[in-house]
Image (cartoon, rainbow, N blue to C red; front, side, top):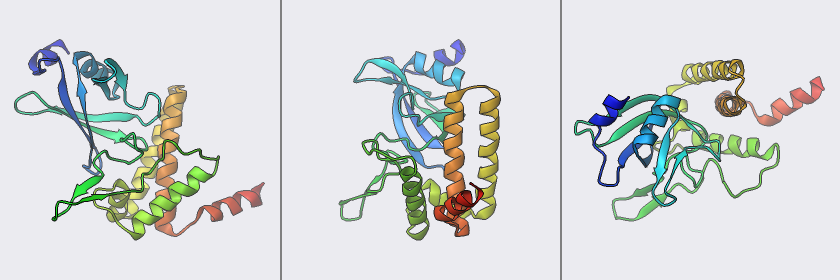
Length: 219
C-alpha cells in the first residue's frame, strides 16, 4: 500500500482527483478528491472514501444516506495524478438524488438540458409503500422515454438475460451480506435487489398491484 501511495502524485494540498464510474454501464457518476488516508481506506474497505474540502474531514460515500459505492476496479492514469474507480452504486451518486452528478447537458445552442426526475428525492418524506411506487414509476418512465446514460436504460437495452443475471447477482449479494452478519450490508444489498426486481417487473409487464394482490391472497 505504501508503495502505491508513494507513486501517486498528490497536489500541493495533499489531494488527488478521483473519477467514479458505474462498473456495469460505464456511466460517469461523480468526481471527488482523496487524500492519502482516503485512498488507503477506499482500497482497504472496498468502499469509496473522500476528503471533504469544505468540511475538512474524511468521509465515506453513503455513510449517512446509505448510497454506498462498492469498488469493483481501481485505476490511475499515465501521469499518476488522477484515480478512476469502477463501482457498484447503491441508489444514487448525487446528493440531489440523481443517479449521476452529471445530469445537466449542454445542447448545441449552449443551453442547458437537465434530467429533472431524480431517482431519489432526499427531502421527500416517503411512506412505507410510496417509495416502491415512485421507483416503479421512474423505471417504467425510463423504459418508455429512454435517457442517455441511464443505468436503468442500460439494463433494458441489454435485455431480459442481463436483467435476470443482475437479479441473480443481487440475490447472491444479499446472501453474502447475511452470512457476514452485517445489517448495513443487508440493507444496501436488499435495496439493490428490490430495484433490480422492479426493473424485471417492468420488463415483463407486471405491476406492483399484481404483487400486492397476490400477497393479500396469501395473507
